Length: 521
Figure (cartoon, rainbow, N blue to C red):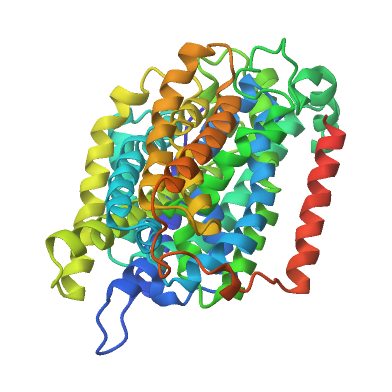
């Protein structure tokens, strides 16, 4: 069953309301014109609740909802490790990375690398991130979002991607990060409410006597293998989630890269009022992260019983959405659209920030006015959307579990990214060539490794390659003269102390994770 006129009416009200809020928060004060700090960092005015909500809204994209629900269908609850381990990663990033980044007053991650290593590293990584964001991330969000729209409305994949791209551009191109962050507050409320609603409906359908709790118990009883958090070697999905290696190996590298050194995510924290607000924002996001598997993965597992004959796992969530009654279906569909357009808006804002501040301003237009730079960012956002629109089908059209495919792709680069940041932030002796060697060796080793060890799960490969990248970067650095004293991070001059409230919250999150893994070991 698709959408009715009432469902479309709910979606229309949501779309108009979102655009109205975006235009309202983006308005300029009389006599003031947006500068680069306003457009790319929200004028450094974001409070903790906006940062936390925006982090989750940016993260819960179609990749998360459609892709992770599809992996829940195929794998089970074990895929939720990406979400639950991300919560503790956010705590680590808030405590150890944010103080360094905010002390350097940067706009982008490449700017930090320039201040630490030099311009060659900045330009290399700027180009790398632009290609990764456009070719991998933006195409994935558009493709999986279009999958849901196509399933529920019958709109072709291309036209669905076109509509989603146009909607995200309409509310984000003018206002920049501020429009994205403050509308994300609405988005995340709708996302969590709609997500819990579809979970409740699916579990209620499963219960012989009705009720979500009874349905959940029935689901665990019927599909006990889908609730194994640590997969055994004989599980066909072990190659993607290698047992205890999930807790001890490459997933840490992937999560730290995504939450700590990813412009698409960390840009919200860079736009905080101060360090304390940024850290509280990441803690808020960590608590929200604990909820995500219950609204994303559980519907995918439920689809094994409710829709066992779907053609691809990534169709699981759209099929569960069809179970909702008229009107409610429109509300949940609006939540799904919220996830998609929020992530698209966040991604194109990050692309425009790197392109404008790291490439155009220093290399092409060093004397450009603030107005010209802001307009350059808007053009870059639009071009990125158009490129992703035409790249999505050839890259992802034949993929089965898109979420796992994306993890495998990014696993080629993340070891080097984490290695260069760890060396640059915490080892004064690291040099420019050492940093570049760590990044380049990540790609080379990740490409060669499957040929030497074809049976090693990609996540284990990520962990081993990371250690090798750090070793290579350190070895090359020791063969050179040390970097200038002004470039190294002075850790003694940075206050890593956190408040009592922060520490208590960190302990609570840790205990919650221990309880989850103890329950579904």
